Amino acid sequence: MKKILVTFLCAASAALLQADSYNQTITAIYGGGNPDTGWAADSGNGITLGLRAKNRDTGATPNVAGVYSFATGLNPANNRALWNYEFSINSGTPMLSNYDYFLGIDMDGSLGISYTYVNPFAAFDDNSFGNSGTLNGQGFEGPTATNSLLAGSNSVAQNSENIIFLGLNPFLNATYNYELFAVAKGAGVSGTHLTDVGITVVVGSGGSAVPDSGTSAILLSAGLFGLGLLRRKLG
Image (cartoon, rainbow, N blue to C red; front, side):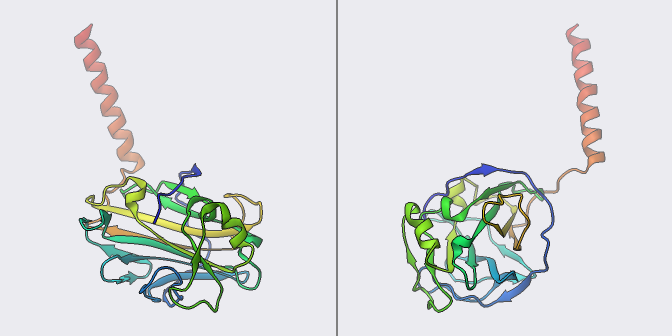
C-alpha cells in the first residue's frame, strides 16, 4: 500500500442518500487471502459500490450495520494500524471510466466528521483492476499514471489502505467515517450521487463527543469573560 495523495479538502456531515445493505459478499480481487465477506454495499444505476474495514492480521470484518470495531494499536512487524479501510467499485456493463468516483476519508477522530475527498484513481497508485469474472486475489495493478487507461478497460477496481499513510494516530480512541459515491462524468464532488455507501469505524472506545452549539456558546462566553478579566489585570 502506498501513501495517499490528497486532492482537496471538504468538511461534511450530510447523510448518504440511499439505504446500504450490510455483510455482503463481494469478491476481493486485490492481494492474496483476503475474505470476500463483510462489505457494506449499495447499488444504483447499474453501479455497485462497497466499503468495509478489516483486521489486517486475522482478516475479520466485524460489521454490525455498517459499523466496524477494532482495538487501538500498531503492529510492530509492519508499523501499520491493526486495521485497514477498503473500497470496491463495480461500474457494471460500462467501463469504470464512464463515471467519476469520490472517496470521503474522515480525518477527525472525534464524533465529528471532516472528510477529505479524493478520486481513488488519482489518489492511489496500487489499485487492483478486473471485472465481474476476476477471481479472488487475481486483480492486476498499475502505477497511478496508467489508472485512466485501466479504468477504460475494466469494470472493477478495489484497494485497501491504512490510516498510517494519513499520519493518523493508531493508538487514539477514535471514530472514523468513510463514504464512497459515483457521479456523472465531470460532475465533480458536488454532483448528484448515482449510488453511494458509507461505513463507520470505531477504534478502542471510540471518539470523543463534539460540543453542541449551546455548549460551544457557553465555552465561548466563558473564554471572552476570562479575556476581559485578563485585560483588567493587565490594565
